[in-house]
Length: 130
Image 1: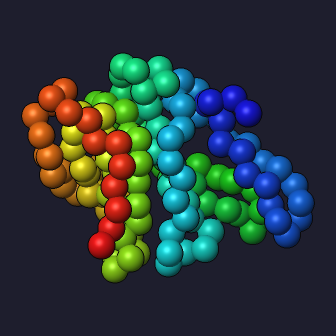
Image 2: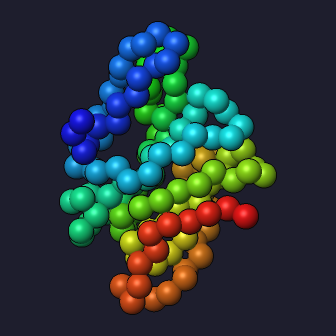
């Protein structure tokens, strides 16, 4: 599987579908706890070494294929993500610039950003909702 593709095998139809995301390697995938057909993928350009990131929102269509609903660009790579277990449209991402970002997928911009440390003093590579 190429790093710029997201491949999914439908357990029901036993078919494979692929979504192409040129220029981005993927680091984390998380299914929504509220919507069984929605998933999010965190990614980074240049294999996370340098460059932008992107949060991809995908859905499984009624015929069991993947569809890219929307994506959000970031100025640094995204390495992890987690859906909120309280709010169905919110998720948090961990970025290479040391920030955690809270997203509302009903909006076309990120909701807010929580900076953990100054840029490039440290990296955030994981997250967990509690």
